Image (tube, rainbow over all chains, first blue to last red; front, top):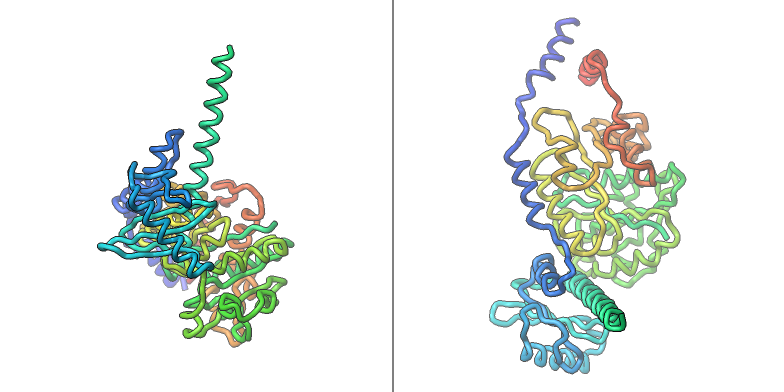
Length: 163
Length: 261
C-alpha cells in the first residue's frame, strides 16, 4: 500500500518531463505587438492603420457621382468613376444587391454602398461581406470623427480670431 | 438589453462547446436568463453535449428563412434555452451564416446572456458569429499552438468590432511545461477569467446513456466548480487574478496526488 502511494507520488513529480517553452512565449508576445492598431488624431495616419488592420491593399470612398471623398493612396479618380458607374448599373439591374466583387488582374475589387457613399476596396483576396461592412463602418466612423475634429478646430480658430 | 458573447478559440479541441454548455447552466443558476446558440453551423455538437440531439427545427432552418427563430428555441437543462444547429451537411452548404446577426438582434431583449458557440478557425461562419456578438470570450489551452490560434482569433474579433473580454484556460494539468495563467494573460493581453483543470469527469459526462453537462452531473467536481466561479465573474464580480486562488499546503497537495490516482 505504502509502496504504491510512494510510486504514485514519484510518478506525478518525476515523470513530468516538460519544461516552459520560453522562446515560443516570446515569439507569441512579439506576434501580438505587431498587430496593434491604435488611431491617432492624424486622419491620413489612421487610413494607413485601417489598411493594415483590415489587410487590404487600398480603399477609396466616393460620393454617388464618383467624386472622391477619401483615398488611402491619395488618388484613384478613374477607379472611383468606374466603380460608382458599375455599382449604379448593377443596382439598377439588381436593386437588392448588397455588394459587388470583381476579380481583375489577380486583385479583388469590392464595391459596397453605405450612407450615400461608395466604398471601393482593393485586396489580394476577397473579403467576406461581413469584413467589408466592418471596414466600411470603421472608415465611416473615422471620417465622421475627422469632420467633428475639423469643426472643433474651426470653432477654436474663430474664437482666437475674435479674441 | 442582454449581453451577446461569442465563445471562440481559433483552435479546435480546446473545449469551447463544453465550456459554453456548462457556463450557460452556471449563469442560469445565478438567476440569469440564458440562451445558448450553436453557431457552429458546419460541425454542430452543442446539442449532443446538452443531450438534446433530436430537435426538429434548427438554426439552419432559421438562416435559410424556412422557420421563425422562436420556433427553433428549446428548453435545455436548468432553465437554459437553446437553439441547436442542424447536423445536415446539405443544409449547411445552403445556409447564409451572415443572417446570424439579424437573428441574434431579435433576441437580445429577452435574455440576460446569449452565448454563441463558435466554430474553430477563422472562416466565414466564424466571422458571422463574431460579428453577431458584442463581446468575445476566448477559450484556450496552456500550450503555444492553442494560444497562437487564440491570438489570431482575438485580432479577427477586434477587426469585426467584437470586444474581447477575457480568456478561459481549459485542460490545466499544472505540468511544468504548461504556459502559466500570468503568461497567457500577458501574451493575449486579456484577463484570465478562470483556469479550468483537466478533469476526467468532463469526459465521463459524454459517456452516459443520458448525456448531461458535467456541471449538472457532477456539480462538485473541480471543473464544475471553476466554471461556476467563471460565471460569477462574468456576471459582474470583479476578476481578481490572485485573490480567489486558495493557497494549497504541501500536505494537501500530497494527498491530492494520491487521491487523483
